[in-house]
Length: 191
Image 1: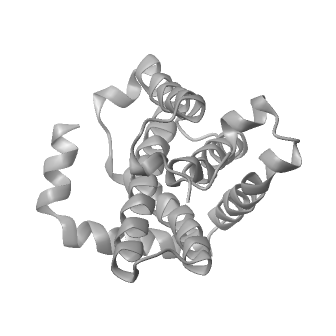
Image 2: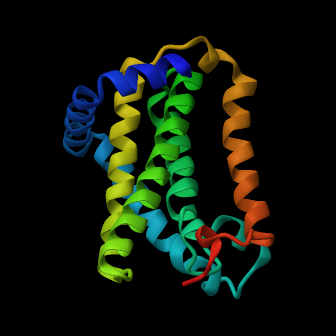
């Protein structure tokens, strides 16, 4: 991981150019159907909790309020489900694939948080249209970053199945716990 952080910090301009090329490549290639599926699932995920009659099980996977934290579920879970579908369709090297997907969804969520707080801080409030565009941008950026990592990342940790699975499970666990017991921090405040 330290090697990857050093590489990113020393080659940021080249990385951003490569990620932009990967995003454009994803949109043009067969990956577009997976990007579209994640975007559609995330959009449906936004309304599923209320459509389910506020089911406790559905609340674990869908936003239950208008906090930024809850809206990260719109990216995380659809991205995970679409990644499973893509894996079953294309059969890439499983651990490398899910390791790269995990890193990319985490960076996609950090992209969401940083852009949301930056634009809403500058403008003094958030706007629904910008929030929707931010979500779709985060989906596209996550897939682009995943393509970038898939081609560049080959560390020994991604061959450890327990490590890769635990990354996904621990993050999902945090979503579940913080849905039931949100900390008293702005990230968890409902707008």
